[in-house]
Image (tube, one colour):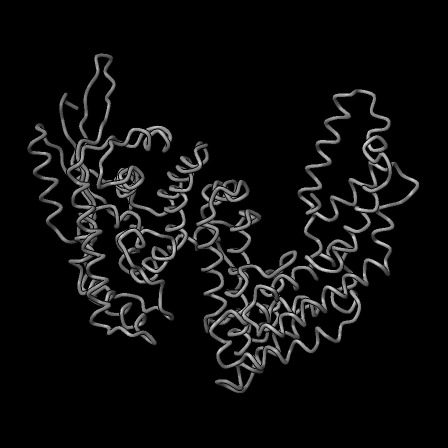
Length: 562
């Protein structure tokens, strides 16, 4: 190869292939741009080849541009099933809730272009391409406005005008960012943040995301983008930088790449469970078609580094549960079995994963198992879902969360009626599964108490349910001698006091009679003559004795006993 030659490559099916070679950079760039005029060309770039003195050749990309391949079939928006969050300013459009909506709304276009909402929102060029594609902008704004004005004193036309103004402001911000000289993405993303110029009209975080978007736009595959982001996140220690990377990973997990990450799944029910497992960082990647990528994600999930991505996965799993698609398409007789598997997976210590959203999804899926339709079918589904739960405590959690959904408008009486079963549970073994440990039973009963207290149930019902659960817990402490076991007279007063205080601060009891009973024993212990002296008996080192007292007083604060 002669010194100074330039390869002109085009992007085909995710791979760069050399189409021509030119001796001058000017001719190479001109030919690349000629290729890009073809609407079927996904991308073109110029690679400069330089022969070093030792005969080796170094390659560097000096020009690269990708674009959406247009076909004969028009690209359309994907209709939403509920009104999205109400945006008031351009800043709202960058939030997680809005990006999740954009991801669903423009799914067809984004899949074709291999772009995330973050990449589009931070690139004037990509925004213009989306706007120029068929009627996407008009259709999206019209659809959202129509959904949002229902029940409000504003017309769809006025809401469209508000939305268009916000979109225009976001577009103008991206246009202005085009002309700002920005450094390239190098090293840690926190380094990129630190290197951003100070521009009054453009926050540092926004400009850093512009740089990141430019980098990702040149990666033509979903897994390639996720790998790039995960590698950056795994080496990042700055929380702000990590959360910004999380926003884009969250976008990517809303794309069809999830199928590659999960690999073959025997049923939709299994896929839902696998998505929840992935979000918890416990997914078995053996069958994944992108195992290395999935392993990186799991590491980050286990480190609690990706809260937005976790939210997107759970939301996606629950939307699939709420859909009409069969949970076990290959064998309809296994539908109920799959439903019960998913239900069991949604039960977590002290609550139901994702609360109200899960309760609604379970109910709507449950309505598919009853013959009646409409209001009667939903009433039967509420009853059936409640009965499918393992105990009245989990049933109370479900009903409490369901009261916070739109189903409460037609079914609050049905929800309240089901609570009679909770009142019939007089002791802990009737309220919670007997197979649970002492701690898990208290945690579950307390979860039912707290879910009820924060529910949208009528106030008098909330009071009745929480007081009943508190009474059951109080009786449990007495019948099982829980406090006496913790405060055994045969052990050192220090051990007894620490155990009791930790018990009160562990969150296994709600604020009420049961917790007062435990605190009363601690107060009795603290009022013993010369408590501090007895507490440090046996600790010879004065410094260690003083530290032991300090640590105990911290526990008192945590246990609400300061």
